[in-house]
Image (cartoon, rainbow, N blue to C red; front, side, top):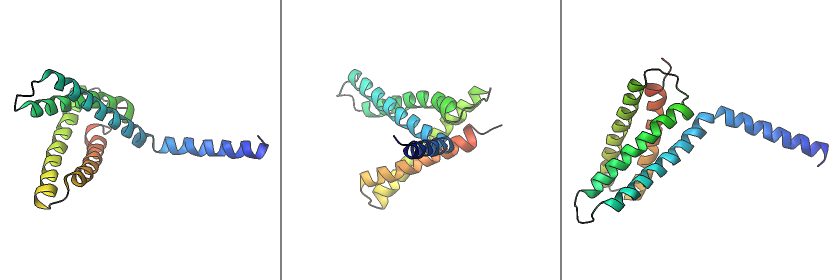
Length: 150
């Protein structure tokens, strides 16, 4: 490789490092989000193995328990890797995290009902749009309420 090519590659690497450092929180939030979704789906899969298909309330139980598993993973992952929280009052912080996720969960149900049942938007289009709103709301609540510097 010529000296000019080496300089160009080094410059690109330096620019990539700057971008990663600048957007580290968003990048890590996205990675943690994907992993949280994987935990939720894996928990649902495992729980489905233990439920009898004849039980009418099983989907509610599976979804609720997989949601709990996802939050149990998401809180410490967000605390440590995304927001790098140093707050010593972990119980309060965790309670705020769970409360914010309950709030966005209720918001998700309401928005899905509104978009699908009232506005007659396709279910999957609504699910995609509502999911984006919920992800943004979860980030904002985490940043401004849960993991804010005290």
